[in-house]
Length: 410
Image 1 (cartoon, rainbow, N blue to C red):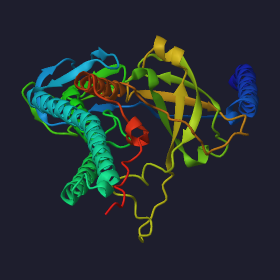
Image 2: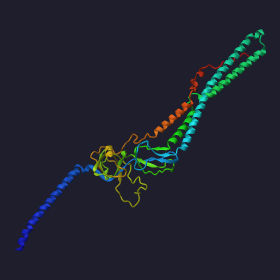
Image 3: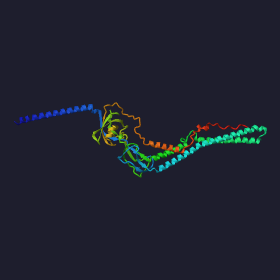
Image 4: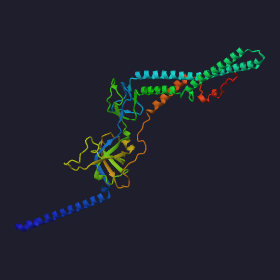
């Protein structure tokens, strides 16, 4: 009696178990079909990695001259604008050198101005000696004209000839002095005279050295890695602090080499940052591929030619830029971890980038050269006031005819 009762109770359980297994198989089949559709339509066109980090420009602040720090105007985490003074060095020595260079330029301008003034004096001297020669020649002619009558002695004629020779020698000497002075001023003005240009170059060098005692921020950004202290003696090239422009960061995503088959420049990218979570999504694009893997550029590269070799899948850094507007809303810091998802559906782009123009530049330091030139022009104008601006061969004296040689009246 018990066996039929047990069999009757087991049959409903087997039917229930069979229905559960059938339902589970259907669910697995539906999930497999759904995943297959997802892979075929979406997943096979995407490559992702969590081996990605924020990177950016770390602009080092380094002095160009030796000096002692007397002021530090920025500290870590502070924001600074381009051109703002960050570190100030003691300018005493540089100011003394600048004053000496300016005084030397002023003295040189006055000396060159004297050369141009001498041109006028020597031209006047030549004109005077030519006038004396003309008078001596006329006097000799008159005496020779009346010599036949016996009214003039031979001694007087001899003295007249000597006077002509002396006057001619004076003209020659004056012309030599003029030519010698003109060799120092020909085809120049005071401003472009070689002596003035050399002195101006020393002023420019001293002015720049003095200006470089103030170290400005080359870019707008945040201060990091400040190591400089007040009173510290610094040398050219020593790092004092860094400025990081967080509006121009990018992401370096390290993809496995097998993931790069269809990855191209220009493909769209979706990113999330661990600092904000998956609720904040960034959008960007691929802009370039590194020239080598991380191991190739390491301090001690792998020696794959050795006997004990194990193949390791390499990773290649891929640079990704992020939409600047999204960066402004949710700023990122250098070194933060990122999750990167690249859409590789459109693989018609290239893998070799070409950037023909300058990527980064600053005009913070350009003003120093302009200020130095303005100071030089002021000194020259102040010390050259009233100077002659003749230009050698173009001067009026160059058109004046030379003195006539004495006639052969011997």
